[in-house]
Length: 101
Length: 475
Figure: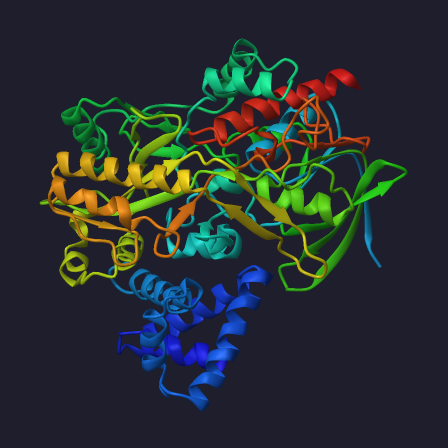
């Protein structure tokens, strides 16, 4: 995962359990690694772009960035937070105590 | 330095098409080698539809997507047995009307409903196909009840399952049925072995170049020399492999799928979550199918989150929530394009405005059925889509299904090569022989002329049996 992607995952993970947080990060990381080249390149390009954006413009934090992307009229931009939110949500619930049933 | 492996027949892929091909040819006495890119996953060792299954048995952990407006997420199996190891096992023969239409449109030899029924009978003698003994699970009965209240037709589909005296089911995937028969007849199945490209010499397929991943993480390059090659990697991987090998005419352009839109339905009481409903509403088939989907906690949460509504209460009540879907047959289709230097192909798919209208209609009809079945809240997989509690509110969904906010997915991918006696219409002839390349056949979902409107596994295996026997008859 790229640096921004790691920060996004950390921000989106709600659990305070360090083991679960680590498991979620590993799940997202391994899923991004196993993505098709084309999709991974697209996500990485967006991450690089947004990393620069966070540095030079507002919002300067990842939560602000995600909120801004969520409100974008461009569906491609909205798909970025949706991807990470989906991966983190699925991972957190399925790897947590309820999902382990 | 590579290892050379000689064989009479190389089968690439071990799913519904590859396993059928391998069994037929091995039992006919041929020397058969099956190369499977994915790992061997011990049957029963992972929970169906779990995160562990996604990691071990799905390509890209189940997170693939066809680019388009809107994009369509899709999932493919990637393990010994292919998608038969991860699907629901629902079993539906190719509808006679489609067989007749395909035979006429694509000038297919020996493709009458009667001929196909004979092959389907034989497949079902090899793969146990049964309905659930006793009452179906609640999630399935709810679909039946909703349809009955509206006067719509619904059907309990059989599945490729066998049941013991206690009613416990075991899925009859390829690792439980045809692959053991193939290996008993002498076939060799090599997992963790990805074919990089086919060997083609003077217009004839002579084998393949592959890379095997050893358990210690090292690799072994393999050169397979074969008298005949069957490509059975499914509707995405088969055309990509042919293109990487320099075969492009009629390959990859006609991809079809069942674009699917989902609803998380909250009921007043608990719904089972360990299985997929066997009932489907068939009132609008084959152009629109309504059924139920995997609904573990994570799946429920994802569909709830799609709506963008406050789902805190519904998620806390997830034992009462189940995911249902409406799936359509689409107008145009998509493409599979192997890109130089990249391992996975680019997949695109185009939906017409009519397709989106059909999806909206399907969503509204699905909502009607679920409310009739007693659902108290419906969350559509549309960003900003209204949560519906009463039938009159369903009208809001008509306008909500658009290209910018609708989240679609599919697990059925077909038709990216197709069969036809007319070279202009397909990449292979009536029996899957690739045009202009001797000793090379395709035998999987990519041969289907169109998305069948039902789960395609039965049709894939039926056609694969037919084509494998045709190959034997021409030797």
